[in-house]
Image (cartoon, rainbow, N blue to C red; front, side):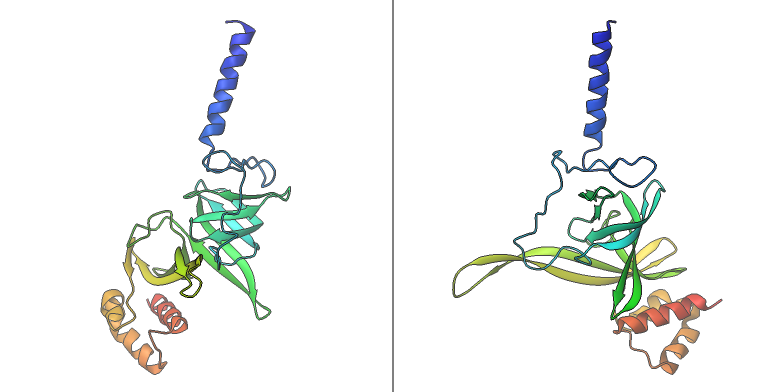
Length: 236
């Protein structure tokens, strides 16, 4: 082959590699300008929600986050936010550009924030078996981690509203939340009623019932659910 032919082949291979990275990221040894940022059509990231009311994000502002990718790579202190409409991660690279990590590429993210000047963190995971409207790429907030994990699904949808007086139509984000229990590789939806005990605590039901009554807990209260699940996980 001639040098020209080799050059053509090399360009074709390079082009195919770029196409394969579409709706994805490519990272070298560090997080930064090496990230290939694009959407499925090769365009730079753009805000698609400017004219909508509300936000598709868990927290609208970028927060320092620790990120673990599906292939095991870990990155700390990355300005990021979770898009719960698209199930993607929006981030700021080291060169200041805004981009995203596409669906199914992030296995875990810990978001650091403050509430009334008190530091807090929110941990999200993906890769949980499909259930209801969620699949394996869906993010879940981890409220309790252990042999019996308590997960929260926070879904965002776009709803259209019509003004009865003016006739104007607008779009806004609606948020829906559901609780799930992940135990021994099986995920089940949690109903905030007494079925909680027979569905998930049967092996320790006497101890859990006693604790529930002694602590005067209410299973409709999220903080109480977390407390009860932590107690169950502490039992030997």
